[in-house]
Length: 478
Ligand code: GDP
Image (cartoon, rainbow, N blue to C red; front, side):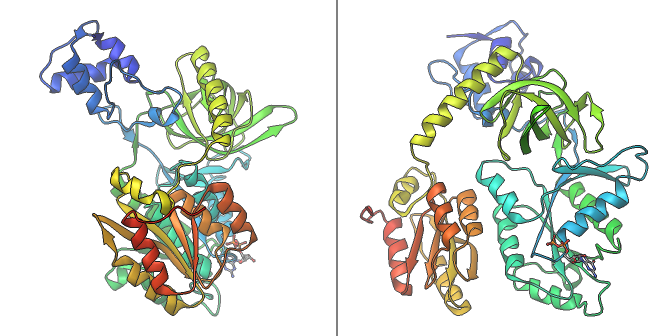
């Protein structure tokens, strides 16, 4: 079994030059047409996390395989992608509008802002991309579909209202996604504004202001009056600088669908966020379970563009069908392969719908633990009163079986909601209701997403159930 460098590069979806460089670093001098022995192939494949079996098989229908992180000279800085979250009426939409109005129109003469689901602004010569759908629900729904697109979240908290249930929920969602949070203390123009109270209340949720010796950036703003917006944008740039978001504009584009619909005149229209590479007119593309060729691209200013680099949102036409928000897209080298991958993904999707999803349930927990697939058991705890939520959380966190620990990713008072279910789906978590039940929507969502929901009235029963499941002694529930 041997492969040339060029053949191996193709199988790994890499440039041959990159493979040659890797080989060189491993002490092997090779040219593009040189045959490699099994050991060298295994070594290189291992570098990309690919296991060599009889022959190197990469599932070309699994779009995640095209999202490999890379390193090297082709990487350049890319704009941060930001989502705005927070309690209802605290000013998320106003903030998004305010940022767009103050930043986009200036200097972009003739541009008419278009709502395509995301937009870009320029601050200090650097771009920032904002997702236009505020709230953590959209964010987590996408994550449940495997998409990781947000780099930074802005948590909006109204200074006259303070921390509310959805603020806490938003924090849990951002933390579960491991996305840095910047706090925008909004409505500072109001008489009743009390930013200290917001700071105080947020410390209880692990967000301690830098002014108080913590690590969270707080920016006082008035979204309505456009005050503090520049500072907020500067803080985003600061976080971006620390996190060093990078991408390779020279590779084939990969990314995620922000939104999509069927347009009477134009057919399938999808806003794609390019996450790596550069998307070009004419590119053969697979998007979720559909495919096509990029016919036309329009940016957030309504202008036709020929290409879109990393972190750029563009509205694309030319797909054979309408994909879903959160679907991944990849550009392939030829249209024939794109069609083949798209069609086989569509078939797989039909089959998968009939089959089962592989979410964690208490019954399958032990199996997953044994196979080392599970390091933390993620739990969401909803209870009737704060005291029980806390007591239950504290006791649950003490359980540890065979190196697997319990992690409470969200804990709150109230009925189990749809948002809890989507967080559970995105984070592979089990939901525990203590003296509370799922509401109608949550019930439906839990069934659709195969999320395991456990309802209890006695604390030790919960602990017993979780511990027993972790030890693999739970009888299947039928
Ligand atoms: P969302 O539900 O979080 O998107 O909140 P909205 O952006 O819709 O804002 C809710 C209400 O708060 C609207 O009436 C806004 O005009 C108002 N609002 C938003 N930001 C500010 C602000 O900075 N100051 C004042 N006084 N009102 C604001």
